[in-house]
Structure formats: structure tokens, C-alpha cells
Image 1 (cartoon, rainbow, N blue to C red):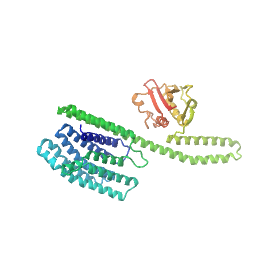
Image 2 (cartoon, rainbow, N blue to C red):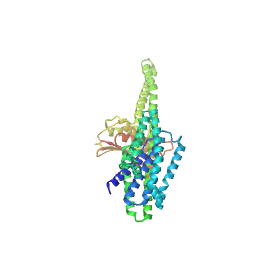
Image 3 (cartoon, rainbow, N blue to C red):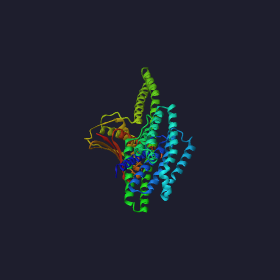
Image 4 (tube, one colour):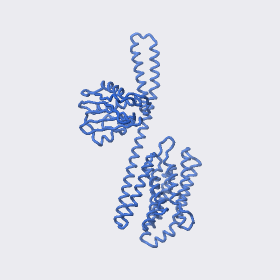
Length: 489
């Protein structure tokens, strides 16, 4: 494999990785899907050129022609979607897709006809440039117009980046076509595609200020997936090139695997994004509720202080009770305000003392027939943690165990030191869960209770993660459940 083939392979990996990153991106930009399709199309172009060099089959040249034609309308689709004009310019997009589709037809025809192949080699680049240059120019005009009247600083930055991406991708990526029509330019098409795609990805996938952008893990997974996909395709074509039937079957199989994997990634990202949005709404609601309660609570506390300075006789006992309850409500409001944000205020605490405190408090609320037991490691020692958050998490676990044991049983709070972690386990003797249920219990809004909201165990997981630990469950049907909170010691 020569240097140009290596370059094509590396660029193909980069473009496929960008396509996968686009599908995993949490950005809600409407250009995300056409952008990912454009990157996938550019990957196909590079792969077709690479395969044409390695396997010397006319079919690859035909595929290159068809995919190159598709890049034209996809590019303008991305620009229109990024500017919010895709719906208003729908007729133009349909016309462009139809025109470039007609331009793609000579590619497949070149496999069966020598005359068509000759026309593709000599005339097709000119026809493509005649369609591509006005399309590119129209996109540039739209972006320049947006720069003159941007909706925001983010909008202006996005337009500038897209202009840069078009300048790189729209000129350098066409070097092959210019060479085909006799213009002496260097071979920079793959590099131009990657450079333009990278700038476009940054413009559209980074998200506005204050919104989470693409995670580093998404990039790593995308690159790994792209490398695996390219290796699989090349392996199929090398091993099966002697049999067209087997080659077609192998290529189809790899394509289906890649498509299914991409679909699963996209579905997972969509579900995660929706879950995060629901949590964000819930967090804002909790914070607002805590804020709204603080003012009347402060007024109540002030009024009680005034009453305590008066001669109230027998009523003094009720004033004292009102003051104590107002203080209790204040502590609860502050606790749930912090719980909604899950921002631990860490200090050295004894995990055994927290477990004992929770057991004493919950013993007063236990259902009939349910017992609470303690199995505490005397060497558990101290842990840097937020006492209130950890206690609230354990209370949720104990209450969840109470709800599970409708026929009575025992709830055991156990502490252990395991390596660099302190582990608090809440075990019950209830009916247990199947694997499908156990795999979802820590998900936000998941519940098996008719009146449940799905907040308790999700909150336990969030507390564990906020402390740098994890929450786990071990269960089998008919053998109870063991929920563990692992905290760094």
C-alpha cells in the first residue's frame, strides 16, 4: 500500500468517525442529521477511491461518481438547516437532489458501457462542476448574509466557521476534479474533505454556550468504530474478491452491522438526551420550589421570634413548637435544595454513625412484620462525604426495601471496607427482581410501583456518582435484593 492509499485510509477513518460523532452528539441543531449523512457520504467517496486503487475494479469508480454527486445537495442541505432555512427552501433542495441524482446515473452505467465510462472520465467532471460551483456559491451567499445580521454571537461564530469549512472542503476536496479537467493542482482532496468536515462538525456539534458539547468518550468510541468498520470492509474485499456473490454478501453483512450499531448508538444518545432534559427540568423545578419556600418560611420564623418575646402564658408551649417545626422545615428545604443539585459538601464522617442514625429513624416508620438489623464493620472508619446526602440515599434504599416486603421480613444495613472504598449495603428479604428490572432500577423515572415517581433509586445513583463512587444492585427472583453504595475511602 503506497502513501496515497494510506492517506485515503486515514481520511476515510476520520470522516466515518465524524459521522458517528454527529449521531452521538447531544446538540439539538437541526443540521446534525444532514451533517452526519454528508460525513458518511464523504467517507464513502474516500473508501471508493481507496478500493479502486487496491482492487482495480470499475465498480468502485462508478460508486465514487454516485457518492460525489450526492455530496453537492447534502452540503447545501447542511447550510440551510444550520441557518433555519431548510423548510422554506424545501423546493430548492428537492430540485437539487433530483439534479444531482441525474448526474449520478452515468456512474452505474459506466460499468456496463465503455462509452459511458469514457464520458464519465472526460465529460462528467465538467458537468459536476457546473452544478457544484453555483450550489457552493449560493451557500456562501447565505452565510455571508447571516454574518451581516446574526441572531447572536453564537450564530455569528457558527456562520464564520461554516464559511471556513466550505472554503476548505469546497475547494480542496475538488482537487481531483480539477486534475481530471487538466488543471495542475496538488492531490489534496482527502485532506480537504477532512479539514472542511472537522470545521463544520465543530461549528454545528459544539452546542451553544452553557450546553454540553460532544463528550471525549463519544470521539473515542467513534474513532474505534470507524477503524473497525474500515478494517472489516477491507478484510471482506481482500478475502472474497474472487467471488462476486460472496463479496456482495460480505459487503452487505458489514453494512448491516455498521447500520445497526449506528442506529443503537443514535437511539441510546437520544434517550440519554431526553433523560437529561427531564432531569434539568426537575432540577430547576426543585430549585424554584426551595427558593419560593424560603421567603414565607423566613417570615414565619421572624413572627415566632416576636411572639417568644411576649407574655403568652399557656400558648408559649405552642409558640416553641412552631419555632422548632419552622427550623425543621428550613433544614429540609436546604437539604432538598442541595439534593436537587446533588452538590456534596464533603467532610469526614463516620459511615457507621450514619447507618445507625438512619436505622433508628426508619425503625419508627417500618411496616408491621418488618425488622431492621445492623451489621457494621467496626473498622469502617471515616469517609469524606456529605452526611445529609448519604443519609438521604440510605433512607431511600430502606424505604424501597420496606415497599418490597409486603409480607414482612428483615432489612439489614451493612458496612464494609473493600480496598479503597467504604461500602454501605441495604439488603432485604423480599421477592427480588428479574435481570430486566434490575438493569433499569437506577434509571431516572423508572418505577414498578403504581404510585411511584422513579426518583428514589435514581437519586441514590446520583449521590454515589457525585461522591466519585457507584451504586449497584445484586438480586435474584425469590431471594431478595442487595443495594450497595460504594464511596471512595
